[in-house]
Amino acid sequence: MSKTNTSMEKIVSLAKRKGFVYPGSEIYGGFANSYTYGPYGVQLKNNIKNLWWHWFVEKRADMVGIDGTILLHPKTWKASGHVDTFNDPMVDCKDCQARHRADHLVEDKYEGNVDGLSLAELDEKITDFGVKCPKCGGTNFTKARQFNLMFQTQMAKTGEESIAYMRPETAQAIFLEFKNVVDSTRVKVPFGIGQIGKAFRNEITPGNFIFRVLEFEQMEIEYFVHPEEWKEHFESWVQAMYEWCELIGLDKKKIHELEVEGDALAHYSDRTVDFEYEFPFGVKELYGCAYRTDFDLGNHQRESGKTLEYRDPQTNEKYLPHVIEPTFGVDRTVLAVLSEAYEDETLDDGSVRTVLHFKPALAPVKIAVLPLMKKDGLPEKAQEILRKVQVFGNCEYDQTGAIGKRYRRQDEVGTPVCITVDYDTLEDDTVTVRDRDTMEQKRMLIGELLNYLSDNYFVY
Ligand code: ATP
Image (tube, rainbow, N blue to C red; front, side):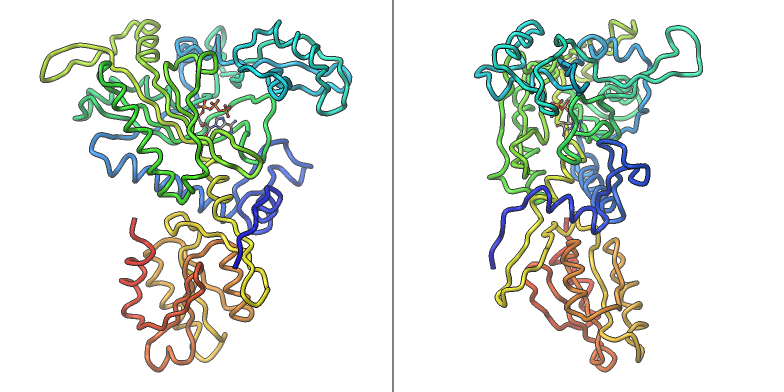
């Protein structure tokens, strides 16, 4: 058996064919860089979010969760620095009107860090390097200018308050509720607040399937610590992020830690470590861990005029906690998990099967129950078993086609276990349990099934 290299085309095509991810608004000719998660995709995505919530929020005594709104008070974004500094430099091609990230146009040719270049320097480099428009090949660009990535929307109000922003990160709702959480629960610093939700960015150059989109989901933690203890907490969160990557089945060798330096740091961060992953199209950011200091709490305290200080119940010391932020993109996780799981496996007989080696916790279908024949009481027996194994989550029943074909169908969507019901089942209450990865088959009593499945597949 051999594992071939996974290309992006294969993943995009399987995603559409099997109902993981469809191009958005397709019947209207598509709506650029928007995607719909199909029936298997939404299962996979929900499983990722549920596992994350369970792992980081429910299982830890030092964590709680919230669910804030997408539209926050507009002053939030002034205080957070996003109105003034959440920009990317862009240029337009005057010949074909295509819009490009100015820094992306020069990054291949420039030896230094493009994030440190001013707008004037970007213009200069574009001319010096003879950069051509990636769309039409022209060299007739506008001057570089800053473009704010926040989407604005209009509220049914007048005046300044009529403008609202669609949040570009979920983090800010957590900062706004910091005091409420401290006052209404028994948390003590160090502790964290987790949140999962949509974020929106008016990206100048979206692309690479669901890697960079305008509307996406984040799973974020703001972890509040004593200012003197940030370093050890930062290290322990970096470790926790590695453990998460392992939990969802990402190969550690494909993860590269990048210390973000100087001007490349976000405006709120004093230290950031990016987790880059070897996606099929290149090594790119999957997650990040940022030390946000007291930047956000301090700014919200100033802007709102409300104290956000924390009082230590033991020492009575009053201070603004500092924050470590581990952030995880949901859509990039889906893409990484799909890339890692995909295999076109050449079998001993020379045939090729496509299989997704999802961890059972993430698999969109946990178990498929397959009656060998559509008659003689086998479907009824299979339905009975299906109802039992549904305790493990989403299961399927499939009675059409040759059994080998049905196994392949389940392999292609990553179902870890198939249970086959045949004539012997009616006689002696045994079934065949077939493993997706090894394709090995075991005969066992129906009465042993639940324990066997939970011990071997669904413990997490
Ligand atoms: P990039 O450098 O790739 O633009 P970023 O450093 O701006 O990413 P963060 O602001 O740290 O990203 O956002 C946190 C996480 O949200 C990222 O690690 C990523 O997983 C996810 N994310 C950010 N922007 C997008 C996007 N446009 N589409 C999908 N996911 C995104």
